[in-house]
Image 1: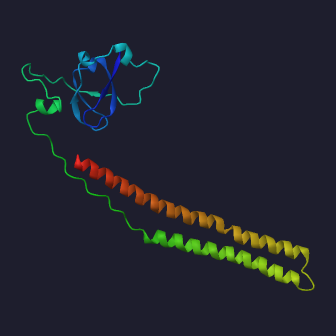
Image 2 (image 1 turned 180 degrees about the vertical axis):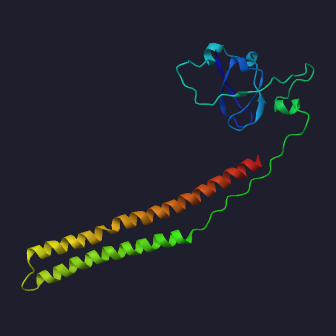
Image 3 (image 1 turned 60 degrees about the vertical axis):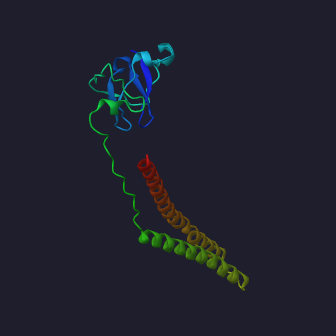
Length: 196
């Protein structure tokens, strides 16, 4: 069975429709709007050019078939909105969507700041331990090598233990900024859809 590519007149998503559904009413899986599918005669190119090979999987969901809507012969449907001329009532009105409000998360911001301060203190403590080791090494008699190696290891461990804490603090900051950006995108999309 051949498939034809049809564009939804409401959301302009590309749909694959089998030839047995042409000329019938269908529901777009993207926007859930009903529309009249074009007839097979309305396609100006040959069916071989439009047919989708069976080995290519379809990326679009199938159109849900509806019962056939009779079109009066003396009253052809409007080219702008085929369903409006076939229905008796006015088009349904959608209410404007409310903007998404972001919850302020002062606890997360404070946790991120505290973790950054603690990580800075850990790095400073590691540096201070190394400086104390150098001061002690200058003194006479110098400390034994085992104690020097142990002190260097402790200083490195204290300094590098701040890395995961800094990474987690930055992760919290990224989460908060991504959440804010997503809120802006959703509100922008809602404003655009309300204007249409």
